Image 1 (tube, rainbow, N blue to C red):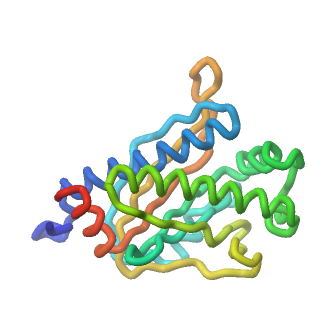
Image 2 (cartoon, rainbow, N blue to C red; image 1 turned 120 degrees about the vertical axis):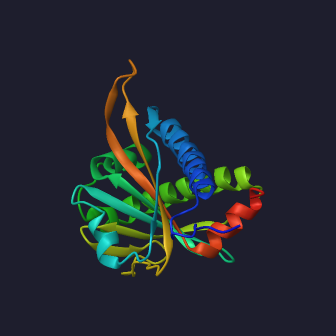
Length: 212
């Protein structure tokens, strides 16, 4: 099927399908986070936006000073990535829950124990997201964490060395936000968002798997 209409706008059916994929993938990731930390997590409605070019400046600019980015890359034959943009204090809580140690700032990648915990957490998120989207589409989807973005430093999960941000000349930006809930159901605060960047060929694969 065609991804864009004659005016160059993203087809409404494709947009709806990507909307659902955003919900499914982030929904499973949020359940995983909730179980890990013993909290409730609520999703916000995804945004599906076609972009002609996603520059490194845009990607870096999307990660604020109080946030940390965890990049994950789709394995071939798919092409694209998923970015978890998480509240820094929330990640500190995650590390403390996993290690019993409180970390701050650059300790997230200079402290071996802390960085190991972050790598494990990234793998947990990756597996949850991949499992949900794969089950929904009936596809075998593989994705691996590969980059931590903190204070504009890009650190590779594989070897702890500096890495490079991915770029995409054409991609579709699917963003979903989520937030913690208090025990009484009251909204606490946003803990982050998830952005899926997939090129046209990958989106076409996903649509074909959904019978579109």
